[in-house]
Length: 315
Image (cartoon, rainbow, N blue to C red):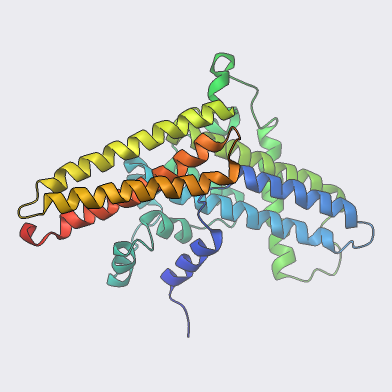
């Protein structure tokens, strides 16, 4: 049975796991890919032709995650996304997936846009992040601990060379994927340049997106611990507000509601303890514990919000 386009996106998301944008992980994938290429290039020259295909796959995964994250995180990016899917119509099936939290508007747009060449990629990101090419040229690491040293050297040394290399990468990938050229279309000496272009583009774009959504990010473990603690406090404050609203529902058993919440707190703390026990005694423990508790608080707030929305006396 043929899967619907919505189910294809859902399956794609499930295969990606919990992460939406994996900039640093994907950069490491490129480094590992090049190490493997160096190791087998002499004995398996055909492997070289696989590299551009893999690099474009890495870029696509990264870019679709970026687009979905931007649109789902901020209203201004959500509003601009309309230009990317002008004339698109949503049906009841899509609404049902949204209602079941299986899909987001960001997911739909990320998989609707064309990312088949460097020009379309820049155009798409420029629609969401106005002035994207200029931001990309000056993008630099945004570690919070190094604010006093900003601006750091740009991630991209030569923007024009990077863009030309990306254009070449997509050209090579298209030919190697869809054609059987009678003579070699890719020279092995090109491969490091193509890989470097993909790597610097991901790093710089990641920096632009981080700035757009979060400003600076912590680099040290202490900074990450404090940052996650702030996130937990924010989630707990939102949960407390939802609980306060729930207690005012007409006819609700407040004692039962309080008892349920107290049981949830006990369970959530135990769950966070269990997850964080993987790094017990280490400096990462507070961050892992707070991360798990924040995720649980977010889920609990959604449960309470659903209770409020579906309370029969509210109908």
